[in-house]
Structure formats: structure tokens, C-alpha cells
Length: 215
Image (cartoon, rainbow, N blue to C red; front, side):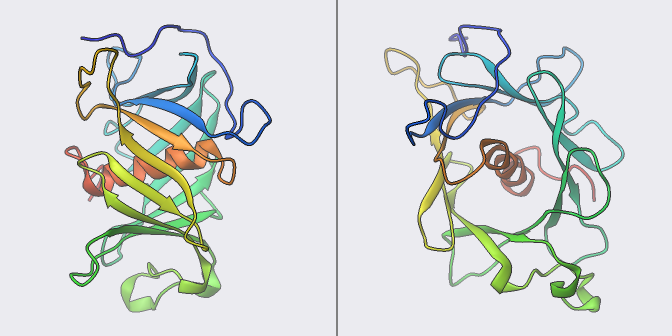
């Protein structure tokens, strides 16, 4: 296999690593560094490790934890149970209370470009009780994701329709394709890089070949 990353050094990452407002270009590898685990490994443009997921599709708790290079939990993703549709909650660190964000798979035959919506979470603005409180208020929508995740061609749009993150196919030197398990995540300064990677995990749960961590 073509070498995915040149270094094994742990590093931190921001959306603007040089302080000049430039985008961070990350390499996402759908593979855990731990032998017995499934997950994701994410490297910066220098080849340094910045994010990791080691419990992907392996937990009975129905949760996925995004960690930094040192193993510190950044966000925990949990599927919202007893709700209609594909709905997820995102928590700070490893907490299990007071979600920060709600994500919902978009299903509309009249708008096939849209994949998902990500909103601020607020109990006061949950959907009806009959749907398990899974529908976030449209006024709270922070990001809309469009494109095709299976083709690794997606854009994360903010409220002003500005592209704040993109998923793109990655090619090795010489034009050799890596395949679907290795791709680029381009993160603009307007969004936190860890949150952008969390959106990737959500898309993989909604549209990836290994979808459905829990049902």
C-alpha cells in the first residue's frame, strides 16, 4: 500500500495552523493504529498524528469517541434512540449529559444534494415527542452538508452558505488513488478541526459501508 503518512509524531491541530487564516489540510485514514480495533487515524500536512478513533463499531454502548493524538476525548457521538430517522447527538469529551450538537440525516427526494443538517442542541427546540424529540429547530441549524460521501466529495456549509470544510479524494504521488478509506479533509478557520472530523464520522455512520454502530 502507498504510504499514507510520513511521521508518527503526535501533534495538535487548529483550523489555521500558521496563524494566517489558511485552511488545514488533513489526511483521514479509516483505520485504527491499534491492532485489535476499528477506527480512524488523522494526520496533518506534516504527517503528524492529530486525531484518532479506536472504538469505532466495537462498542455495545452505541458511542464513538474522537480523541486527540494523546488520547484525550474531544467529542463523543451517540445515536439518538427511540427516534424516527437517522439522528445523532454530539457531546463534549466523554460526557453523557447536555449534548452540544444534534445531527440528522436529510431525507428528501426533491433535494438529493443535501446529506445532513447539524444544529445547536436545545431541549426547548426538540422535535415533537412523537418523533422522540429528534428534529432540531431549523433556526438552530449551524451546518448543512452537501455532496456524496461515498464518492468522498462533500462540502460543509455554514448559515451563509460558505464552505467551511470539504471532503475530497486523495491521490498519492504519481496519481495513484488511495481508495475510499484514505481521503482529505480541508478545514477552513471558521470551523474547529475536531468538529469537522466529528462531521466526517457522522457521515460515515449515515452513508458509509460500515454504517449503523447501533440500532
